[in-house]
Length: 134
Image (cartoon, rainbow, N blue to C red; front, side, top):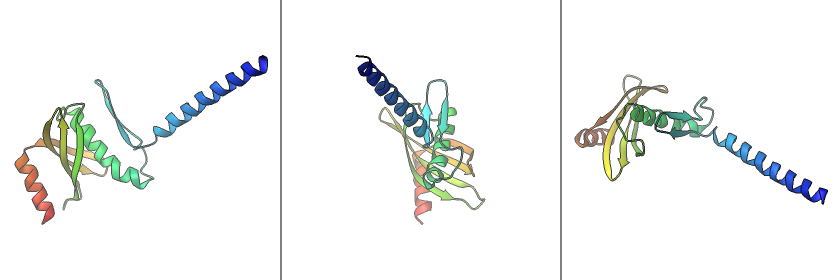
């Protein structure tokens, strides 16, 4: 009976360790963790991967909007504009949808630092998309 109990214990311990290491690996992937008290960007400490280089600026923009209360906490973001500007900054713009309401936003970034994050009107957003297409 003892080897059976030992086998069960070892199996459960192995399962727990596997879950712990899976959790630790997922913390390295870029993402945005949202709570009522804080919003945190995870996985953007270093931009080693191509995925991190693409996702981290977007995540920092979303965090700035959430921190400034420009978008609701449960908003689903869609980034549609990502272009460099003449002054060396990067312009990100898109939509935030929450409870069926769509709001438009723009972020200006210098490297991974958000220099401006604000909501804009639909007309301004459409002007941005027209300017990018031309």
